[in-house]
Image 1 (tube, rainbow, N blue to C red):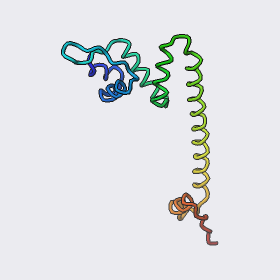
Image 2 (image 1 turned 90 degrees about the horizontal axis):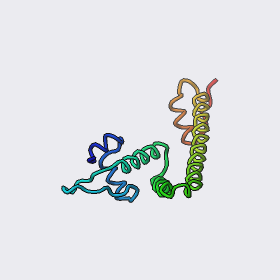
Image 3 (image 1 turned 180 degrees about the vertical axis):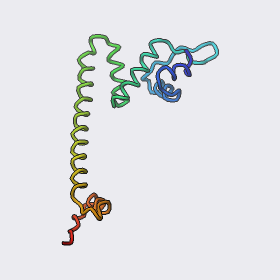
Image 4 (image 1 turned 180 degrees about the horizontal axis):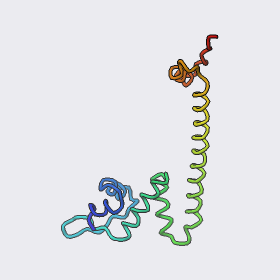
Length: 135
């Protein structure tokens, strides 16, 4: 299958497919007599894996490692589980940070005087003290 069809099938651009090949994450597919790449089922499976792993936020180096480990068969299972568990821990840390930031922004919206809310928020984000309401 040519790179254009593989691109449509996997949702990855031809440029990214070539990039993954250049990085060694995707084995170079065989070439036709014309010199064009000819992707088979295994390359398509690997590219789908890469896309899904990227969607889950895995770093490209970790994706390469996961692919290497998967080629080891059952011997790589515990290392694969460890990489996935580490990504899950990262996601949980990010989720905690996002929730803390959400709470902080909610508090900022609740705190400034209504007449100057937008301007006061910029000041608060810059670390300036909250404006005193005249009263």
